[in-house]
Length: 327
Image (cartoon, rainbow, N blue to C red; front, side, top):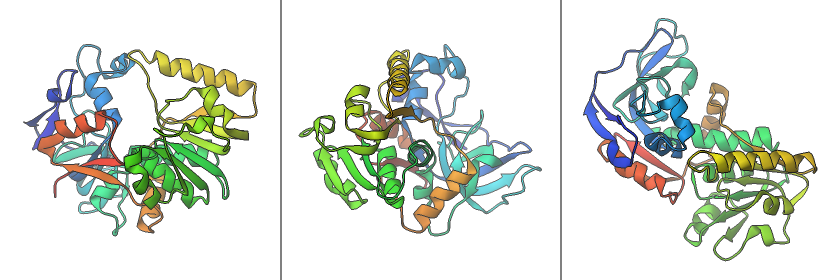
């Protein structure tokens, strides 16, 4: 079978399409015939081995696992002897994990616990766009921020993968949503439900008189103090992205600052690290199936174009998700 392989850290050119042996699921695993996958910043960070702390688990000099791609959708090809939830032919989506699991391939293996059934009216492309981005937004807004009806929510970086899901998930909770993006994305974020849109090239939301109950920050381009100023009393800032630096020093410093500032204020500054699970994958599948959320897909690439897809995502200018498709 064909699969995207990288054997050293570096730019997108290190990712090559090679013929490899078709994987076999273990006792608790599922073999998927991949129909679609999506690219995340996660992929280019591992491709480059940056921040360097990634190499502590991925391999210091070269990657231990040579496959890339987490978000996946497709049809079950085979199952391990302990698998009870799925059978061959089932249409599923979820996340890949393990040494032979990369979603950028014709077939991929992953544990049963990382998959759910795909709703019939949700496309493979839509389903593949969900796992990392949508669950990050869901867990940030539902679990960290406790978003409720009538809350004023600002989504910074509203046009990206997490941002487009964040706008729609907040609206599904009954929130009033302000989206921050560039001028070229204004109409798109309005079309997915934003009540108000701020062009960040023309206006700095941290200097506005408007106050928010919740800020979902996917960019990290403002100081925590500046963001805190536009939170209501008991408001919550949830950080889901931003600059980390080569050694993650920027991210660590920001996390420590958030801890200190939260200790002396009723306004809370929190981070979110996505936890992939079947319950939340099912929740997102239902939101899409019922039309409350529509994945925004910017570009589609073939498997042979995976280097170009990762390069585009690395620019940080993708609208919504970038999908690898076999159609």
